[in-house]
Amino acid sequence: MWSNQGVTQSANLVLHLLTANTTRVVVRDETYPAEWLRENAGRWAGHLMSRHAKGSRIGLISENDEAFVVGYLASLAAGMVAVPMNPLSPEPERARDLASASIAEVLIGPSCAAVEESVRAAGPGVVVTILEGFNAAGQPIDAVTDAVHVEPNDVAVMLFTSGTAGPSKPAMLTHRNLKASLLSVEAAGLDLRSSPQAAVAVVPLYHVFGLNIILNLGLAIGATLVLQTDFVAEKIVQSVADHGVSILAGPPNMWKAISDLDPQQTIPLQQLLIAMSGAAPLDAAVANALRNKHHIDLREGYGLTETAGVLCSGFAEPDVAVGSVGPVMPGVECRLVNADGEDVFIGDVGEVWVKGPMISPGYFDDEAATARSRTPDGWFRTGDLAIVDDNGHLSISGRTKDLVIVSGFNVHPGEVESVLQSHPSVEAAAAVGVPDESTGERVAAFVVLTKGVDSSGIEATLRQFCIEQLARYKVPTQIKVVAALPIGVAGKLRRRDLAS
Image (tube, rainbow, N blue to C red):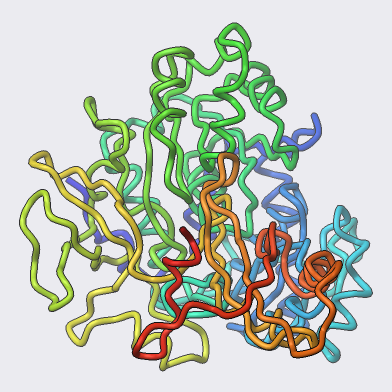
């Protein structure tokens, strides 16, 4: 039976992640064993401790590689807060993120050294360090035995999310949150420790799916972690074959690309112990193709940044219908409620409310947004709509919020609209999500031009303007000029009219 006892003890998360001697990280055919990770994390932890106080926020910009892992573990060992950041964020977005998280220092992996000047410009006064070689300052520590003492409710990580509470902001995840999520996965019914496991990490590690459900879980069970940045189906399958991979998790667009391969190419994937799709809804046709054509028993999971990863998953259940995200994980309390906050009947649609030790305490330095995401008695409002069946399995059916999910990344329409409306040619703007075969959804925008503006070529101009202001996944793939936006009698934008 799963117990919460382990997450109530005072212990740094790094103690949970770095004690297995079987851990290996593989990057570009180079192998970094547990001893190497521990030594280098301790060296960089000493560097951070020589410069900053416990609890300081440390930005981390790197690809899925050994530098990311070292910088992340060093931040934890030093008792500081790791703040992974998107390497591809444009300067205006990076400046907002650096300010909103009050970053003390940014560690940049060698793979992202080209963004150093951009980071310095976006965060004047922020210390910037290339995380490479032996140029760490301070006295090295042992990343495990000398790890700084923390309490379970001390913040370990902050991840940027549009979440349930508006434009992008850093959600806080404590040592307790992250460990509780890991323990719930391990308690869900699969034995992940009796034999060595291996996993491919192709999901960006600055996303909660990649960070906690792949990296942290892999470290905790002493797995071999194959870190990749190439989102190429053939390369992923080859890694599974080369490294005896037993765990493969990723967003629907990864699985769609795999399903498009010839079945003879995907035979190595039939060895997987866990094949899981998450971060965005999975198309039933893709799931059926993988099961029936490729003989891969793909299961779907559901979670949010604010829940430290997986809330529901059918990966350990014998029979989960296509389209279902399975039962709630051990340690999670869940309700489906109507607009009045009353529990709905089985088979009826309701908003998902959850409680549990993996739920974030809130958004950094934003009490109002935190309060909006909680009920007075402590339930976290996910903003997602679901149906539960007689087996206790959930199926996500939509969202109460306007959030757009592109390849598992949250995009708040208001953020896109704000950028578009800052352009002098735009009087009003609206952004919506529209279905996309590859990414689940994509952003489409509609603009009303300022009087007298020539509309010729304006779509390309505005799209380039967005590229300079927003992360790529937030940039509208199409921008349409309209005479007026559909406004209801109460003065609210009718997004459904635009989406249709």
